[in-house]
Image (cartoon, rainbow, N blue to C red; front, side, top):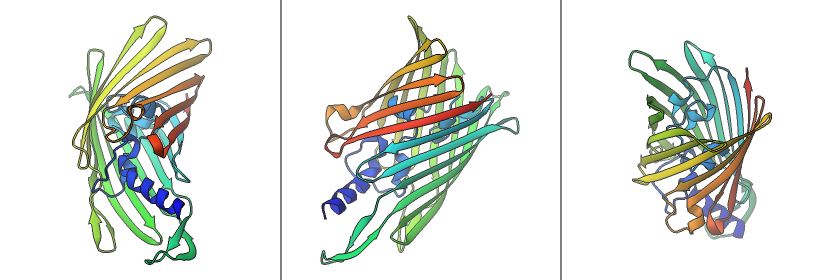
Length: 306
């Protein structure tokens, strides 16, 4: 019974995703709020204004417009209880721009079934949510901007009861000197319907910027983002990445801040992590706390085909 109660509570908190909301919202497919990638997570999820990363398809699809090589990325998040969240992204240059495929899935371990009176039914079920996306971005030279879009198909299953939806993301980026600014709107699409109940997708509008600079031996990248959604009206996130070249390796330390962590402790506002790059291989780790619910860890592996 304890596991059922804890798992139910965690699933309710998934509307918080990686941003640690403490109260449930009204949107379906709330797993799409969970931050994707160890590096973006460690930088406070402030990624709408960061370009040249395949993981941009989960924050602002315009960010992949200037990638020039084939890219692969896989992320696995160690979540609460038996909940696992994984993401895959692959991209390549195409049609004078860049195209990428994204796959996301959150899988809950077996949950015991109980009838309405609380009696054990001696059976289990394993709910899951999945999303597949196809993204494309390119530079529009006449307007001096980068533009991108993603088309997504989302599906969910709870004990054999399924729901699905189709949605789109739109994004744009523009350089202002060394500052890269980005804006995106995510999950514009149909509602998800379980039986007779329908709920909208988590609509998110992101506005962010990033700024590279040098601090002593470190190559720095600062980022900041505000976003609005139909569950939480305003959030501010910020992060910094400090890269240090060490021979054939590039070592990175990261720190992030998230403004919205109502009802949780101070540690829940902070994220951190590190990265190691060697040749075309990338390894990233991200850490975040959810107070009494526990700690979350993200591990990402990437490869660039040059």
